[in-house]
Image (cartoon, rainbow, N blue to C red; front, side):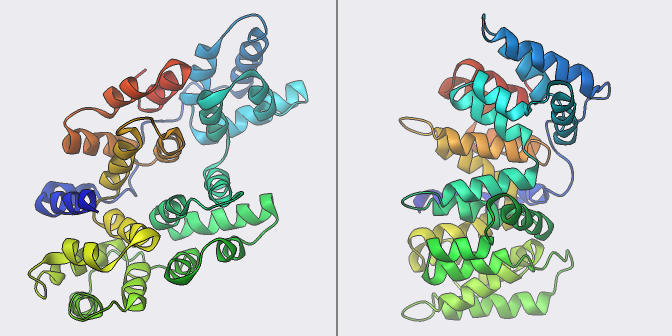
Length: 342
């Protein structure tokens, strides 16, 4: 929680960060190849996969997979299947291994397929990785959530909301199901009157009284647009000497805290939110490669350029430098390629 407080203070004090919170513009590092030819790329991958029996041609796989847009990769998959009668994902799965394999297979999925895959994996087996559920549902647009839900049903034969209900409970369940509805406001216009009343309601539901009325906090954070939330956070300072950061630190705990903080951080500065998650994934002993892969792959055509900028601003070193320190081999090479380094 101390790290969250530091994060919120940093982005609240830095006016320049507010301009980077909107990931709707294309600040991706991966662009469509202007000289794209699906048949040629499929043939290159076929040779690279066959070479794996004798040696290694991972360089070609990185060059083709990481340097094409997702839409182009879907065409490569179709061309490969048409020429070989086999699924490209299956062939690569046999040829590759470990974290490098995970990235390549992730890149072959469409964005809704990958989000659905990550949601399913977070709820698979004993235990649930609640932070992944919060990250995906808390940072995607209504359109993206709807597409993911449709894909989840199509691929896994289950309704996402029913799956979530079976994995979490209480206020966290209420929050995640509210986000699953994909009805959150996305209006960029600010309603100052509503922002003032919401800020007061947040104060009265938490800091002003003993105990916390979580339903009020959940309703505001899951229904208001990101632009509206930013205005609410500013007005909150009129009611509290401590400020929103300390209030939330005191009032919320555990997975619910993580989920609601995701909404707060993503509303104020989404690239900074992802930069922080990447930093934490590589901080200390060991590296959380699942988080590293998920964020870099899922944001590569959306706002990874902004995330890289925020990472440098927040931590004084480049994301690429951190990746080179924490990873190695082909996994390192494909992550750097996705960052636009190679």
